[in-house]
Image 1 (tube, rainbow, N blue to C red):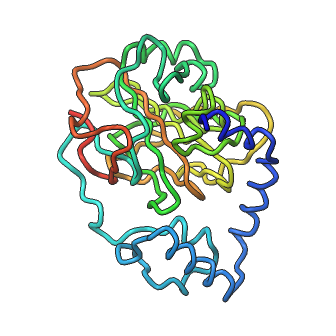
Image 2 (image 1 turned 45 degrees about the horizontal axis):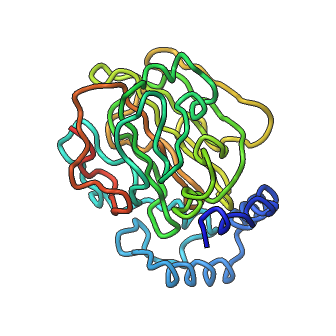
Length: 278
């Protein structure tokens, strides 16, 4: 069966209603039921609780508390590199932007303009630059960290669809990452220039949040927040946001002499803090 046929049911599913329902129950403290749900989740997905700051499953009051759990200090040391991996997950795709086209999967691409919510001036800065699409599965650590130091310039919330972002859906839904709901974070850095980190929403992802804004409310039209110089400045490796269930981050960088880690290949696992590019 082709990937397009496999994802056909997703077009018919009430994705927003399912996502809101999941988000509602994931945020409710339900005592023994919460603990039992987390225990089953850990067993099914093989979550490594030994590296969590709180390894005791019964200590989490809600499923969201568990899902956004912090790690023990030192669990993710930073590599000495200009760009480090911002998440635990797997490489969806990584490489050079072809003009304004970002490779999604075989036969699938999307434009940088569409990804950043229609801002052609911003998108033009990444013409023939670098991109990385990283997928976070349910078993992964779900806090997102800074791949490099950056001064926040702008944030946009772009409403959209809520397709799954797993590899099958990436192959089967055209323009998936520029089609789903997303939060676009625009940073400046003296060395890298302007760069973008996009949090892509998905089915059952209860919400997305940043450390400076908190939880991003869904619905309505495109919303934009502008930040004064120095208002929000984050160091490399510092937490910048989190997902409430698995999703994808997409990064765009201006053309430069940087080269991605030669060991990085589509489908390969990655860990937050490892060498991404130099």
